[in-house]
Length: 459
Image (cartoon, rainbow, N blue to C red; front, side, top):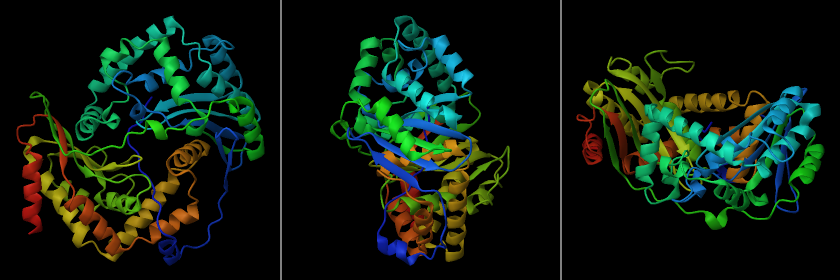
C-alpha cells in the first residue's frame, strides 16, 4: 500500500505563540532518545494493553533515480516474504500466534513498516520488524512473484483517475526532479529490478540517521530504547542530506483526452509550501475554508464551506476536494475535482473567486471557525495508538521533533485574519497556476487563460 496526500505543520516565532491564549492541556509526553549511531527512538505512553510500533525511514521515490524508480515500493512488497531466520509461512504464523498485525506503506518521501501488538509482545514485534527490514531473503522466486503483483497494481492505479491525475501533476510540475517520480515506478523498470538493485537500495538508504523507531500505546520508553539498541544498534551511520535534490516547481498543463469518459477528472493548483514553512498552518486554515463536497454523500461531518454551498447548486459538479500537500522543500495546494464538462466555467470561476475572497474579504468570525475545525480534525485523527505512532514518526522525520498538542493549539490560535489574507494573496493570487485534467478535455482552458481570468476578477 502506498500513500500520496498529506498535510503538515510549521515552525513559527515564539512571539506569535505567546500571543495565543490557549488553556493548559495535559497530554502524554513524547520522549525522544538518539542512540550513539544516530538512530532515533520516540515513544508516547497513552496507556492500554496494546501498542503500535513502527520504523519510519527517510527513503521514498524522491530518493530514487531514473534507473531505480520504484525500488522503495518494490522492497515494501518483499519485506514479508521471509528472512534467513523466518520463512514466509513461519513469519505469518508467528505474527498470527502473538496476535499482532503487520503493515507497510511507501510515499514520495518516506517508507514505513509497523506492527500493532499486545504490549508484552513489543520486543518480539521489534525483532520481526528489524529482521524483515534488514535481512529479507530477497529470493529470486519471490521477486518474480511480486513483480507480477506490482504490475497488476499498476494496471489498477491506471484505472483510478484520481491517482492518474496526481501522478501526472507531479510528473509535470516537478519535471526533471526526483519528486516527479511515481511511487510505483515505470513498468519497464519494474520488469528489470533484481536482487542486487534491492540490496543496494537497502544498504544505501536504510541508515541510522534516516530512521526512527516510534511507539505509542502501553509502552515504556526505556524498554523501547533497549529494544532499539538490541535490534538497530548495529546500523551504519548516514542520513539523506547528500542525496537530497531540491525541487523546482514549473507551472504546466497536462491533458489526458478520453472522449468516452462522461466526467472530467482534474486538479487546479498553485505551488504550496514545505512542512516547516512558517505559512503552512495558515494554508491549512485556508484549505479548511476551501472545503470539499461530494454529491453522493452531501457535506459530510463538517459544516459546508462557502465554496461547497455554491458548487452544490450546480448539478454538473460531482465532487471536489481541496488539498494542501507538503514536502521537505515545497508543496502543492489546490483542488481536485470530478465535474461535467458543461460546468467547467462555473467551477473555475467559483474556485478563483474563493481564492480572491480568502486573500481580501475573509472575516474574523469565519477564520476562527476554520481554526477550531482544523484543530478538531487534527486531534480526531489522533484517536488510537496507530495514528499517534504514525504522527510521531512523520514529525520526527519532518521536523526532528514532535510538536506537543498545546503548542499546536497555540500556533493555530495565533493565526490572524491579516496573516491569512497575506498568505493567500502570496500563494493563490501571486502563484503560478497549473492544471491536470483527464477525460473530455476540450472545454478545459489553458493555465494562461485561467490566470488571465483571475487577473480580470481581481481588477
